[in-house]
Length: 191
Image (cartoon, rainbow, N blue to C red):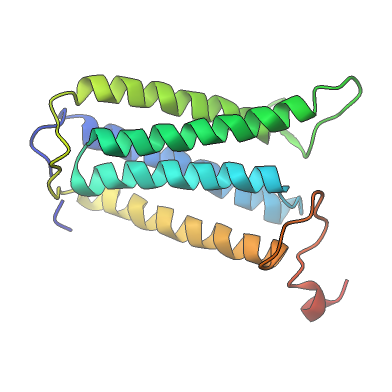
């Protein structure tokens, strides 16, 4: 893989790799939780996953072509969309006596963790834009290294797994508000 920008901060590639790895970990955790605990994600949960994927694409572009304000803008736009969706879900479940949707992890629901992660992504981009202020939008291909390349491929595989899971759950139509079964697996396996 031929990848390396000369104008970005020396730690930029490493930090973007770590940030992409964090997104991959969040997507893997959500998918594993869905499969292991048989908790199908609601439509808002799926939109949060999409926002994580779009943010991951921005970070992947930084790894592949070098740090660029346009790539960070993509991450910020995706994080803002994720904030809107996760805050909407958080506010939906603020009524007294409402236990929230789904299980909790370390005392917080996944949509609360997603909100925290999206806010952290915006903070991360602000810091990286300051560090990479000398970089331009004339990004050049750069060398991501073995670890960076492996994380990029892992990101692609996790995105494909999430897309397959969502297709099995919702088909090509609208997802149910409170899903209880995979729509495309019911005809094959029975209910």
